[in-house]
Image 1 (spheres, rainbow, N blue to C red):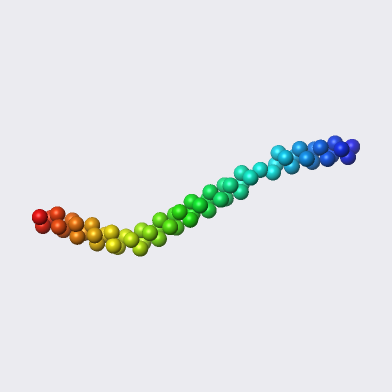
Image 2 (image 1 turned 180 degrees about the horizontal axis):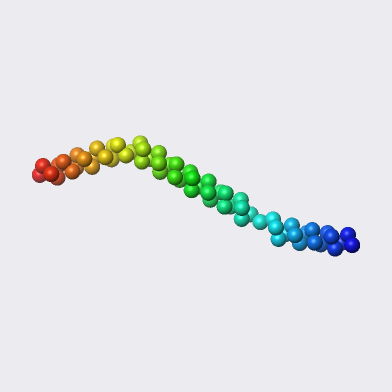
Length: 63
């Protein structure tokens, strides 16, 4: 009876121990990190890009 229990235990552990949850968490962390980097880049570069677009727009209107 003990060998049947060991067999069932090994079979269940082989079927239930997957890395799907861990890889899902890793992908979620990567997406969150990319989003933070994009938000920071837009925050810091947004004003410089806005002023550059405004100067280009004014140059086009004055030409």
